[in-house]
Length: 229
Image (cartoon, rainbow, N blue to C red; front, side, top):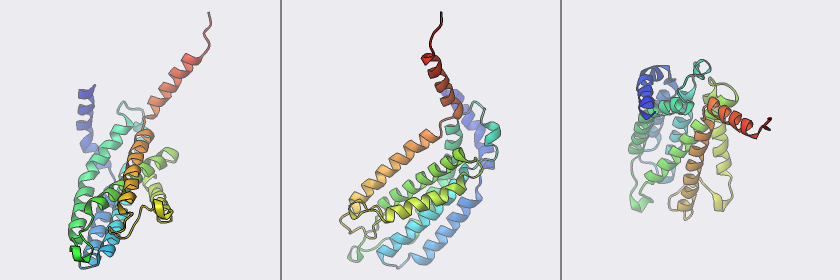
């Protein structure tokens, strides 16, 4: 079975790459790099962190559009699992997202210790990864509830809404802090780690192939049905 799946993945790489909506993440990458290049260098650390967070939000929301698939309704019956098809799209997207994020972090630069540094690049990367996972989950939820063509459109308000909620959490549960010198910084990023794990679990659950859980439901119904002699 593993060899069959690997062969399917190899066969799907080229058509999947050609079918993906590359324009949103590519333009988001260009805008993010330009925005950070204009705003971050020589700024104080809190403002650099804000600029990187805006760039991450822009890139993650745009990335959700790669899961939109106009052909999903016609290929939903094929033996290739939904999770594998969407996982392949994400795998093809990740080099663009990762290289863009490395670029914006390097453009933002570091900050001297006397000025509040160093920059918390690792923690900001955790935040960006969590936002990306949430955006992809939101796209999958939108695709399941509405259509596979509009998942990316549904992702933007969901992600922005969750960020807005995070801004108004109680002080002891704050996730978005302005300065790494804040004593709550480490605790806040424990919440980010929990959110990332939760988003990964939701992504796996939402991307179960419809046929698989319908078959499980049928088997359970047959087992629970009364037996007749």
